[in-house]
Length: 295
Length: 64
Image 1 (cartoon, chains in turn purple, red):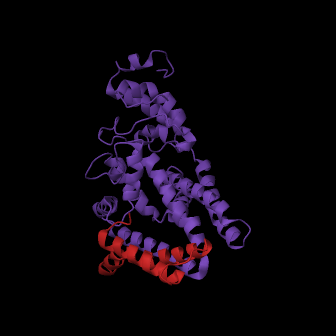
Image 2: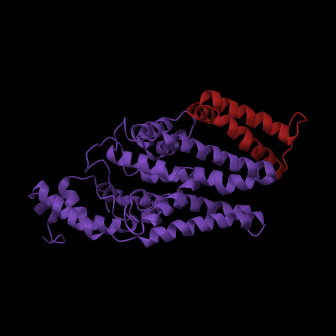
Image 3: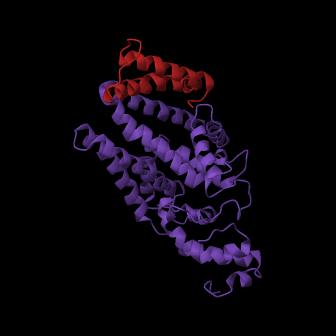
């Protein structure tokens, strides 16, 4: 069947669930299986750019006020390559370039003070239990509107936040108590590095190159990756738990999350190909009653 | 091991306050040439504010 036909949603509605699934999977296969080099260059380019800020600032070659916004961008960009690695999109287990997948994951996630395996285990739990109030590790991002969503991201970073216990519960369910220990070790190391810099006279550098960019980036990332695509966070079914929407800041500004529905249905499709996959799958999504925006 | 992890995780706000927040307040005041009140040094003031804030976060479970 040609998926570009006119009146597609009407025709598709008459198809069986099995045929719809076949059609959808055929499109998904078209966009998967290729190594997304863009994610690899993104990961290491971003890492190198952020690391280079430190000597540039400490040697007085770049003013701190100029480095701060760059560090914010670096921090905001760090999550998506590791997200590709969490889903084994760069290379699946047992393949020749598997090491590259793991390297991308480990080399980037530490900037966000999370062990890669913690992100992977908890994120898989999010996919299995999207919008489940008991088991979705990201459920605490849910909020009635954008401003309350931003506030929720800040609340979620407080010591007594529900998100902390949701992540710990997810790791316990996975039988990975070792990762809880590792998470604490990462946090202690983070504070240790910040403290060592700060007590040696570089408190403002540590604040404006890492701590504050990290806080700003986490707010941005949780807003677009966690809140916006799942809003209002009450739909539990496979085809409705994630939506598409048209973002006021565009597809790049929202980090490609306008098409997050494709990712939840076919998590092996690389991020940069989800817009094209979405456009091709949209008639199927319409036939399935998905929550779709004007894109 | 589990006990040690729980202990450290349980006092992270205090560790953060004294390891990072205090020197940030101190050096920010110096950078903006702000004097500390009550005849305190900027570091003394930072210890007072940062330490108190850390204690509040430690006991109350939230920074803000």
